[in-house]
Image (cartoon, rainbow, N blue to C red; front, top):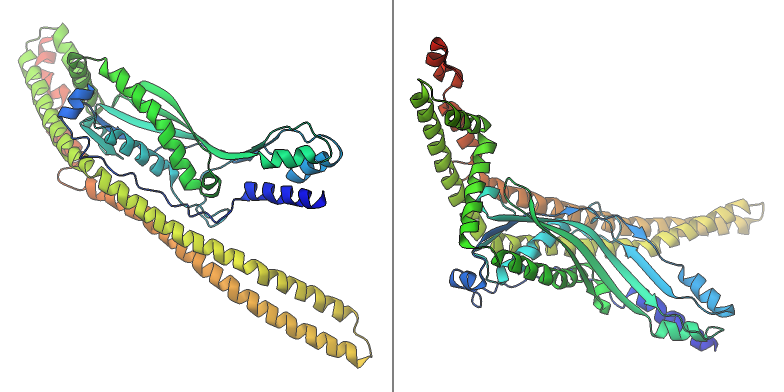
Length: 447
């Protein structure tokens, strides 16, 4: 019976901790361009839209809602073991070398995964990742990461004195869950579609490998959301989408020049001696904004075409950071033994120092303990140096990865006449309404 108990305990601890170290590598989804050509395929699907996916917000909160495993076994020794259910929710990834050294930026990888899944349907003309100019797209999607958690459950078996505990441990299940809320928004407007996403991963690798578990759960959860999205938008006719694009351009104008909207409305309500002058200003502003709009949309489309390549680069950089993070974690774990040895040597030295007397053997013993302490401390320092060195390399790599992402966006924003340049040129081109209305003011016909 004792051997069975130890066997059950060993099985259960393996289920809780996993059988091998995690790789935590993010697998890059392959694009299916050959299977899903653009254009005709998009028309067949009935959703010929341009879509962009922005990085998500990470709103996870770390929590541990688990009963103590030793308590569960202890209860089973004298009575029935209750239903066992551990629930450990992850917080946002650690970037300072603590915890499990998980350095993937989930807010970007989760969004990039959605972009690739949408693109692989072949039902959208363009699916961009991390857009710069949102007005270039019919829809912009983003999301909130709500929860990623690990669960281990053991059933209640009505057998007393550990018999039920052993059976429950043998039939326990483990897995992970991921929850995300997704929102589709009209550029410059409000939400047009909201959906909850939940996916699970139930293999042993899911518990050991946080990145793999998240990716499996997302693929599972994104599928029904994408199907619902396609169904929802395929019911809209071509005139509906044309009207939506016209409204998008109007929102662009309203954002850039609210005064133009008011001026246009005023001209429709009043007949003024200087109406021709005002109408000329309205036409001039509209023409400039239309040209800026076309230019920015064209430049954004070039950025969108490179989405797959940029996401692949981010995944590669992130996985390289994880390799260094794993090495830093191994160095940290390797330092635990020497640190314990140094602590034990310190205690032995302190004990020997308290026993020093006139007896020469106590002095010899203290000298030996001092030598052991010096050796243990030197060994500890060597392992800690390795750990801190690996940690510094990992942190530098993570920082470089982030800077590379920022650099790619800055490079895109600096190509050609960017939005800031257009805004500056537009501000210089506009004529003052007060100056234009001066002739009307002289005759008392101002609106």
